[in-house]
Structure formats: C-alpha cells, structure tokens
Length: 226
Ligand SMILES: Cc1cc2nc3c(=O)[nH]c(=O)nc-3n(C[C@H](O)[C@H](O)[C@H](O)COP(=O)(O)O)c2cc1C
Image: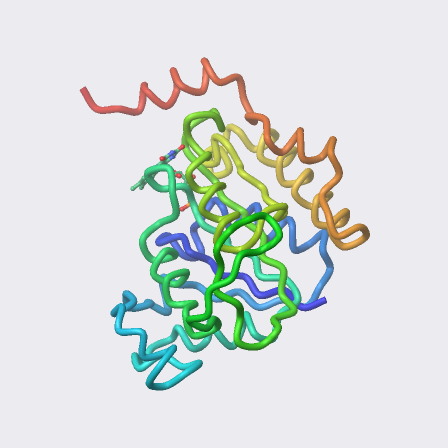
C-alpha cells in the first residue's frame, strides 16, 4: 500500500494533528509521502473551468497543486491531515480540495446514494481518509459540517480520526495522555492495514476526549489574557 499524506495545517511540521497522523502511519507500516501545504502553497481555484474544457485534466495555474494531483493519482490511500478551523477545513486545505477539479469531468450523474456527482476522468485507486485535530473537547456541534463535506466530496464511509483536545499533544505535563492517544492512533493504523477499517472499540476510544472536558475547558480558559 502507498499512502499520500496532505498536511494541511498552516503550522506545518509543528502540527498537533500531524502527530496523530504519524502515529497512524507507524501502525500502517506502508510506504508514504507527506506533502506539507505550508511549504507548498496552493493558489485558489480561479473558477475558469479550463481544466474541463480548454486543457482537460490539467490546471492552467502553475503551482505545487500538481504535486497533490500526482500524489493522489499514484496513491492507494490519501490521508488529509489538518486541524478543524471554524467547523470546517483550513482555507489552504480547502483550496487544494477545490483544485481537484482536473480529476473529474463536467458530466453529471446520480450515484447509488442519490447524490449528483461528476465522474473521475480516469479510475483512481485511492481511498481518502481524514485525520483532524481540534481545540474543543466535544465532537457534537463542532465536527458535523466538516464530516458532511468530506463525505460528499470523497464518498461516505471514509475512515477518520477526529482528535478532540488536540493541543494537549504539545503540553509536556500531559505526556501520558498524549502517549495513550498516540498508541490508539498507532493501533488504528495496524487495524486499517489488516482489515481496511478501524475497529469499533478503537474508533470509540479515539472519538472520546483525552481529558475530562470540564477540567480541560477550565484549563484552556485560564490561558486567556484578562
Ligand atoms: C482559525 C482557527 C479556527 C479554529 N476553529 C476551531 C473550531 O471550529 N473548533 C475547534 O474545536 N477548534 C478550533 N480551532 C482550534 C484548532 O483546531 C486546534 O488548535 C488544533 O489542535 C490545531 O491543530 P494543528 O496543530 O494540527 O494545526 C481553531 C483554531 C484556529 C487557529
């Protein structure tokens, strides 16, 4: 298996989400490449549709988006690794998702789930998965818009890790909590390698907060300047 990781955190290598992603990759034991969007800025889609009509399959903008398109074309698993920003993906990652247009055609059809779609121009082997960290200690009223959008873009039933209280991964005093969470992410990678999916109990543990939510909220609030 070949995994292609798109690190969409503006913090690049310092991304807490990336720590979870690297633990998952350790468990996956696959060949992988990580492309860091903070070091390979992606321009916004121009909305010109040249990639459909004038230069089918390629974008007229010359930037590192071609590295993402090549990575997706040659991978078996594409891992989108980015933090939750305002209930969605960071703008840099969204620019990359918008710029996937060259992979599809203007044809519209209705898929088995009743959703209107554009087909890919060539069959793509890759499954897409999401690894995302966030700053709040709860999933509800927080992750729903991103999960909905990701499923519509890449197909429902995708594997995901949504890491609540993710900044704890950088707090030295919380090392034991972080180690426990990263061990779970490693286990998820092993399970994905063996079964193509994360086991139910591992998923449940990954979905929970690392630390008591009330205490976490109090600690996070205490960092605010008066
Ligand atoms: C602009 C911005 C928007 C954010 N929006 C949310 C949000 O909607 N929900 C949430 O739980 N955390 C939110 N956060 C917190 C980040 O998701 C959190 O700090 C995350 O751990 C950062 O991950 P990273 O280190 O991988 O970049 C936001 C942070 C920023 C800077």
